[in-house]
Amino acid sequence: MNTELLTGELKLRVCNLTYLKNFAGGDQDFIRQMIELFFIQVPEELNNIRNHVSLNNFTDVKNVAHKLKSSVSLLGAESMAIHLKQIEDLALSGTDSSGILNHYDQLIQINEEAVLELKAYIASL
View 1 (cartoon, rainbow, N blue to C red):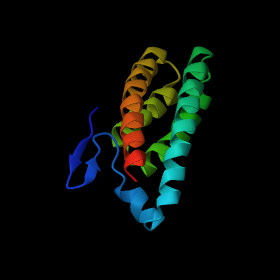
View 2: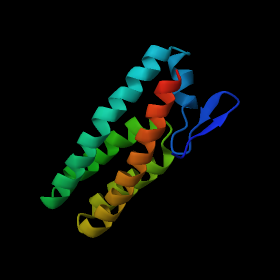
View 3: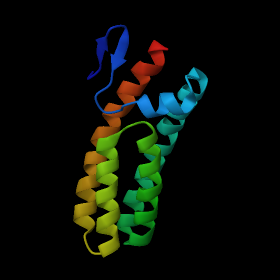
């Protein structure tokens, strides 16, 4: 696992929960709910991106990537947000399915790391 214990708090490598913690005003239940929503929403939306690419629905690819970018940004998953921005840009051109799928594959790997980190973080609450 890529998390480290640092002075009694997990140091996360994919996610930076500073914004979420500030937004939540320290409300641990809210933080937990947002993380659990991430666990549900992100895999569904990543699947939607893949399905829309396979159907050449680039407008829907762009829209889903844009929506998901906001969600991952809340949890400070900047590397995911960067790939989602690239998918948005490629979807605008409407011609680069393979480029979109390359970023999609990266997102799948990063999301797996994020889930492991966030599960460890929830367990530490």
